[in-house]
Image (cartoon, rainbow, N blue to C red; front, side, top):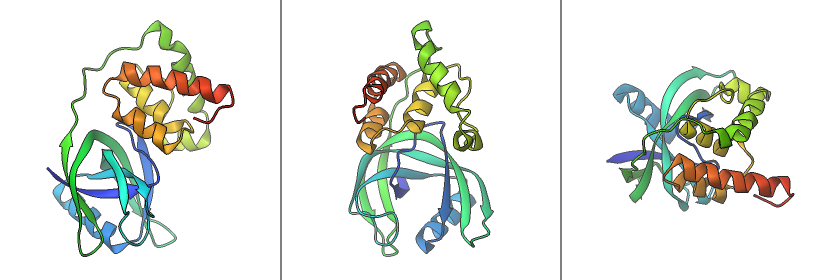
Length: 196
């Protein structure tokens, strides 16, 4: 499956919301095609390079589909879009087109059946509920009460201030239970004052 990529200095997770301001011609053209076709694009984290200008030299081999949920012309003249994370994918091959848009051959990753929250995950659920009170999180409509391990793991991984590499590691874990276990250890590191 061919998917246009939008390399960014962030990691998108399934079910999470990301607001973007678009002004480069390659991405405006990409979004026009996506909206006409009712399709999404891929968000991958930049390993080497910049978000603006020439295509990123290196980006993560795992990413998340971005589904367009809303768009508007902003006062600054840019196009504002809100996307929601969809399916995870692995990049098999990528090429940079003449307009500097990167297009990749991707394989969708299997998602295990979702599981309800367990009693031992109550502290993590309380942390997500507390994050929902932050104005930036509230504006995205995220946080609050969730009922599944998948939603809890993805939202915490997305919202907490972990390094790009840790976020990529969390995105690559196959099950919500694995992601929650790793999150717990990373949160403990943050509480101990260690970088996460």
